[in-house]
Length: 257
Image (cartoon, rainbow, N blue to C red; front, side):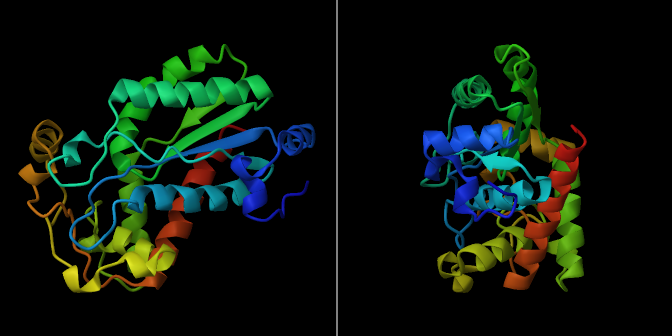
């Protein structure tokens, strides 16, 4: 097995147990655990945005790091603040943690020595940060476990990417905005309802607004479920966002070396 493997060859779900064992023997002892969400993304985007995002980021990160495989995406996350809008499915924090723990203990048992969790849904970040010490204890030092949880750096990365690709960084808000809409124009263009673009809450959420959102849901700060503005979205912006965030995550995980 070599570092220039195809996308499917990097994913555990498409491998046989013998192929996984051979990859581990060949030094592929790092595994990514992508996490997502199935939640509303305004009137113009499907519920799968965060899961799609995580799956595509995982491929970029794995190729960047080298000798890295990809576990199946945990598609549903912690999205209780979106439940007022139809279709959202949310796991309880303890359920999400239990799934992540079972992933980590299984993967560590097979011989993976680095288990790297990240999420295409920023709402999972605080839950991942909280559970991380318990995940490490659960694997009993069999593996080094890390999780990316810096939401501010992620949003700043999006703003830089949008501006670099010719968009308006002021339209970045973090949810169903120019960044996420552009990502879907890149990844799943047929799913974007271009005629349904609407502005949501503009500008950074204040600490009080964030508290209100976590307590009373996103509709308390944005009635249409959008934070930011999708206008001006392009596939080129989406490609830039995807690659810049992929680089951000790969660089973070590389510090574990």
